[in-house]
Length: 286
Image 1 (cartoon, rainbow, N blue to C red):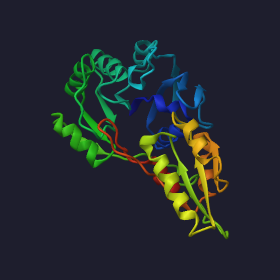
Image 2: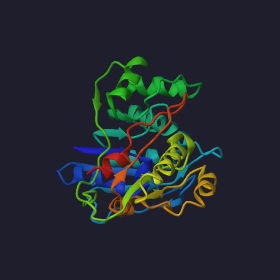
Image 3: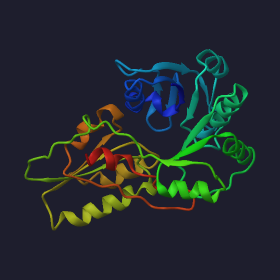
């Protein structure tokens, strides 16, 4: 079977591994991802392909509007690639209200190719036009959907999606993230993720500071980038037991987990955001 996968997150090599695994099982996989992508807090990532990949890569130029919303990007020459590949199925790993989901669902409909989409949205939201129209179009034309969690599936059903829904969480390289237990006198507590108040970073810091007097042997490692980075640095400037190591490339993050005894993932649920699954808990808990 020939499958075309569309996934902007595959600009990160680590995220390509699952598709290489699929290609290694006899399926012909073609992967579309941006030739370059600028993350707001981690900088620009350029096209890179997994060494020994068992898929055909098709990095395309992605256009992102000035307001840089992740769901508004679209690809140049997408029609040409779809027409050349002539896949039997298109898998769209983008939210169903996004511009890129509309782009490839439209092409799928035009070339009479079935498609499914992958969603992680775990909060019921009503979107303004044109996103509401896009979502309805994608729902109507798709053959089914994949949801990250049961909660995401419930949101799809509440929105009126009546087709088959499969639940598949994030995939993790079991060999790379097989973390050995540490042997040391101190207890190292770690946080990996966005440095953002809604991720609970300040709750985490306040908690470990309150523990320090009773448990002087604790050390803390914080890894990540985000909008509240400056405020966090000021908060921990006189806390020598807290080591902030900045942003770490995904392909190297397993080395950070190996330095920790306890991994913590706090978060604060708001009206517009809720922790979707917590990939770091899967990676760090292997």
